[in-house]
Image 1 (spheres, rainbow, N blue to C red):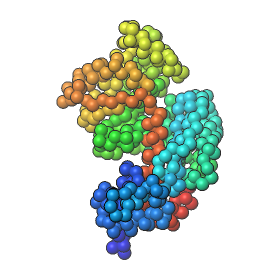
Image 2: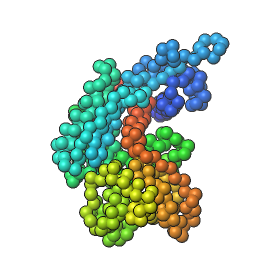
Image 3: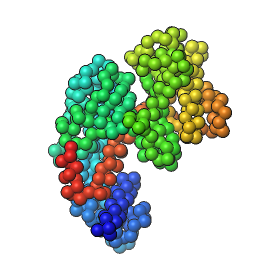
Image 4: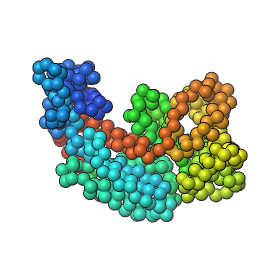
Length: 413
């Protein structure tokens, strides 16, 4: 029995390595799979044959064969698009979207709808999410495959199990159990994640060399969020998604934050905070939740024109962000940072005070050497992070699964 257990573990690991190679590199010949995984030709042949029989892999048509010039052409294998479907849903302040992708990772349907989250009841959240996902699914052909995963990217705090949104600045309601709302409707596994965590996952998938084992993704938008990867693993709280970087204290009893407290980093670096300061309004004024792109563009243009209040607003934002990063570096050492969102368009006015704040610490951190990258649009990264996380979960399921194991999972939904 011990030997059998070990044999099953080895088989699972080998299946996982083959699926990972195909996920990262696309269609490959068996010979190329051997080279990528280090597995023997006999092992690759046996396992890929199993995966073809299980309809997890397919042999594409003529376009899937590559001739080497002599002898028989090498047949390439590919992930079977119809093996499963995943849905990525993104819930934002004013919109809800759903993207359907096949098992090969190709996006095959997408719906984006306006939604006033601040005014919505829990029932309206449920109705909107179900309607958006159903509308996306309705665009698919009947033979597209079975929906097996729904991954939600939400702004705010989720429980560590990914079942509910515990708190979010986009709504006054707490403990919204999206998993319980959606699973009975779609007969698919549902999990929630903080949107910034999904951005961090997407960055690693896009560029695993630059965003490798230690880095952070910081969202510069209406709110300030962080997805943190340390030692190759996403960091979360003990009971919740944690890493609420925007709500670290920057100035005790300082500017009013939309969370209701005073002095948070977000109260200086969020869109509403920058807009408030640029208009020379009191930092105790109630934060606005309806600051639009046009208003933030006007602040940016004012800074370009040399407006002192606009420039001071961005300077204060940079100082808050830099002080927060310096505090984190004191805990875990320095790491590269990707700033994401429309706020990065004005990063030229933020960066200097940010690096100065980092450099002002007594730590052995050279602020100028901190690696910084900017991505102006967060939505594609959230969707990509949700999609790839769901697909990688399916890879692990298929790596370990017999048909019976998959049936057990399906019945558990």
